[in-house]
Image 1 (cartoon, rainbow, N blue to C red):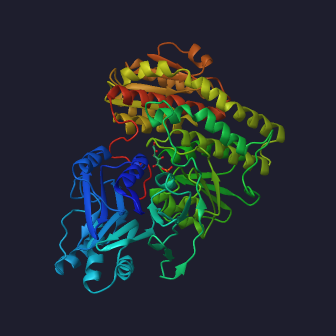
Image 2: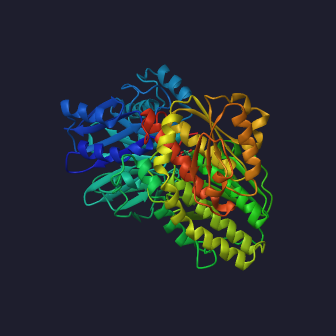
Image 3: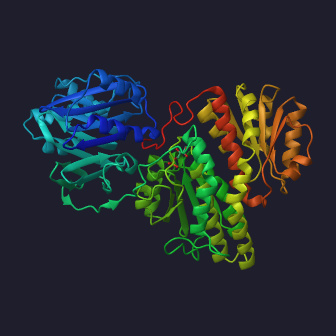
Length: 603
Ligand code: F6R
């Protein structure tokens, strides 16, 4: 979602802000802008579309200045347009914002009545107008921001600049992540470490409700009550900002191909020679009676797969839910509940809210990629998935690493609860350790998937089917395909076919069936036959044994054979590559699909 950068320096900041915004492109955006102070005066440039439009604009109409804030906007209130793009300005105040101001309509009416009329449709402009109104009442910028923060409700990260104030930048965080840095006569504000990594190696992550007053010589942080506080500095990896495509055409392709390597790193961290070794103190499963798993999108499907593992291996009842539903349905959490929150970014607003709901009632565990994220920091314990920065909007390597960590937790639960004997655990550990090599083998069917995808790209609707833990893989396959190719796709449990979706089947609707040769294979094949009997074109994804035993599929994709329980880790590859090559055939923007954001920090 929206990206924020702010710099106070002794050099021209516009080009540096533009570069930092480029590193934030992966979050998804539809317009961008920069404001600076030059000769004491606030000025700004904004443009719709990709950053190229903004940089072209800056070539023709440069924006000098050594103090500046920049923004990539993912539209919430008001369409993508120059007038709605940030920075928003009201009198002496310029502001950039990530999040949503929930009481903006009431504030807007109040401000309008006092002749502070907005020019845009955004909630953000209300912040600038409110702050301007306080300054018109005689408050200085710091006091005006403090009063503004008292009045606005919702989730936000903000950075302010003020006309006539070349050495002042104010940042604030409530609900959306924001980091600040201060060193050597320079000050920075940024949405994440990727944005700021080439500029500084130390960040201070603002905590919930914090706001920071930055000058070139000082950085003062206040908590929500206005009390001055010290927040720790975090050293960021030298490589954090050095994210490169490594010869691949898209981030998504790079990240799909990186999976064997990152899965190996992840499994090495969680698996010993013949047992699981969870980070830190691990999890004491002796009094865990029930597991609740909450996440959104692809991370939710990882939970859905893991439900099969926890139930089958550890005999633990598992409830799963999407965070946006879980947080509002007031689920009772009985004693002995372990609540697990899975999130690549660690900043997804609904998942964070669900975690906060559970905190007083259950033990909470975060499974995250970004270890400094809000979800990681607020949970009782956080297990990293170690996938490395994921830039493509469609989650790929984070999904397989989430599965790996959840597999380790499920095995650890089974060992602690003695539902799995040590030699059986050792056997599972040995199988999981082979997964990176098997994943490499699965990637070898890439050309075949590219061929099939060319035909899939002509379809209007596509169905995905799977049984058991292949059901969530069918859901994941459909999600991946629709988000980057814009083809309508749905995932179903194979057994549900006859209860409705079979009505859709004809020769124009490809049906992709995930069916490893496991004890459920025969049943899935029967459903497949029902599709073929109605003229449906089946793409069967299975291992050699499965493919040998069935005739009549329109196309086949071979995946290495693996014990059924761990097959989801491998079937992620065809789910991802079919989506990727279908999108390529359709010519869509694979890494930044329309309307999507990488980190969903608003509800
Ligand atoms: C789909 C995708 C999204 C995310 C979801 C949760 O490819 O990437 O569905 O999985 O928005 O995001 P995180 O994992 O950051 O909480």
